[in-house]
Amino acid sequence: MKIVLIGYMASGKSVIGNALSKLLKFDYVDLDAKIENDLGQSISEIFKTKGEIFFRRKEAELLKSLVNSKENLIISTGGGTVCYGNTMQVLSDTESVSTIYLKAEIITLTNRLFVEKDKRPLISHINSKENLEDFIRKHLFERSFYYNQAKYKIDVNNSSVEEIATEITSKLI
Image 1 (spheres, one colour):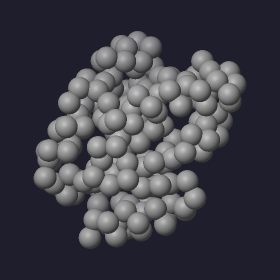
Image 2 (cartoon, helix red, strand yellow):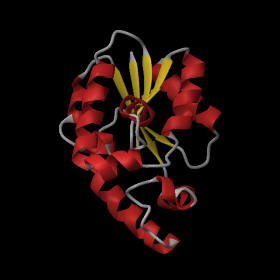
Image 3 (spheres, rainbow, N blue to C red):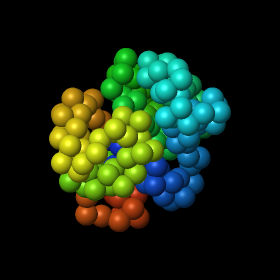
Image 4 (cartoon, helix red, strand yellow):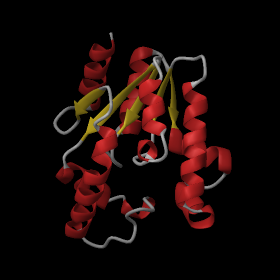
């Protein structure tokens, strides 16, 4: 079984992926961290030196190989992973994969992302919370088509990491 966590930047995919891994005793892969490790560069550096298209191809290739592996895995994707190519379709069509959309409100995302925007290449240029909120609103509107194709949707706004991991587990069992 593969549990693939999808959602916008800062929706909690990595922290919830780690918690799920401990709860279910599955191996955990953070797709962005794996790409950084494999290429020896940060996501920001990859975007700058090789471009977003290169990054998205590498991301899709790596995700497909993880999904096709024989082991049980929890996989946290990047915010845009499922929005490029046929990635979401591949995940939806793969019987051993459960996709889970971690759905956060715009204000939650804005507050989380504003303090860490310098580490995020897509938003590092945004200077105010208001502009960031506008960007997220537009971006989320564009991506929601893909996110909403997930098998399960989990509201992450007012729950602890442990509560969210428990809710996900109850849906899968």
